[in-house]
Image (cartoon, rainbow, N blue to C red; front, side, top):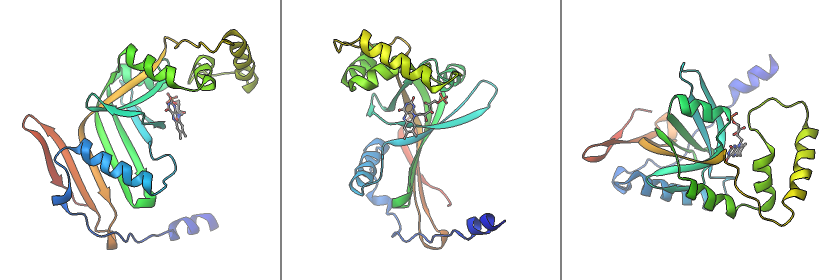
Length: 215
Ligand SMILES: Cc1cc2nc3c(=O)[nH]c(=O)nc-3n(C[C@H](O)[C@H](O)[C@H](O)COP(=O)(O)O)c2cc1C
């Protein structure tokens, strides 16, 4: 009970100046980069950490954090295991949402759209840029499967380190990137008295349309 009352007393009044729509770029990806740089300069821990929401073919929803590794081909790219729970959901239902929770800046950005696999060549290029331990790690873990103990992972890691002692660690076939190609991107910023600003970019045949949403 004590804890509950403490939780409901948590309250923060947002202090930022209202956003000016005229200062927003026509292209939401350009605008995203502006906010991303501001998040980075503000020292936000892992500014590229984003919550990825997916749903299976029966509309059962789940979410988890992944790291944004680039914006290219018109979308937001992350890397993962193609045998994981999220990959299964994406195969059944190739739609996803991403959320960047930059709370220290009183901001969030939500991206929603279609998910596609990036090319093998793109995945390979990124894989080869990863440190040795991370490349080995991609081989160790059958992500999202049940394992009996942590020891299984550690001994497999040690085995693989020996196997690839020359440093040449090939990319596992079942590891690679996905791109979320946005249909909508919403920029949210907190304001005083809960009068927050929300700008929603929606894709249309004529390009991006920007609307202001009620907070
Ligand atoms: C800060 C942070 C970053 C993460 N980055 C990734 C990532 O880039 N790719 C990934 O597959 N999992 C990443 N994870 C782990 C995922 O949140 C998740 O546990 C894993 O991908 C399995 O998800 P699934 O079972 O829903 O497929 C990260 C977790 C945290 C907390």
